[in-house]
Length: 96
Image 1: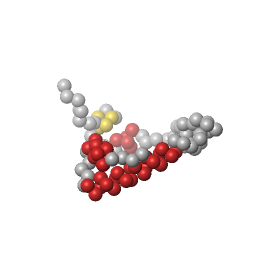
Image 2: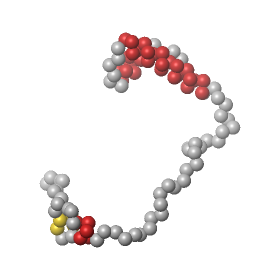
Image 3: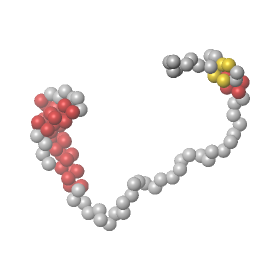
Image 4: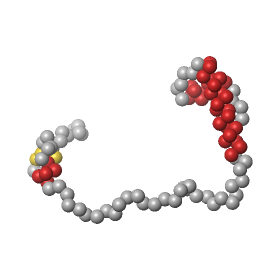
């Protein structure tokens, strides 16, 4: 599929890109080559390939969630700029 310079200008306008005439000529050639390659991929017989959402096998990379010792309330608040009644004290973010 061969793109025209006008089509490349249109795509550039949609992407809010300012291209020079040299860039338009270059991208016309490059984008046409990409579309030709994508078109050739459409002709590959994939009827023997089962549909799959993932190419590689997936597995859980997270560790098991196990309770472990944590900071005491006092240690957690030790470097807080402000605290009150055992909680972090922050400025209100909602206006009334």
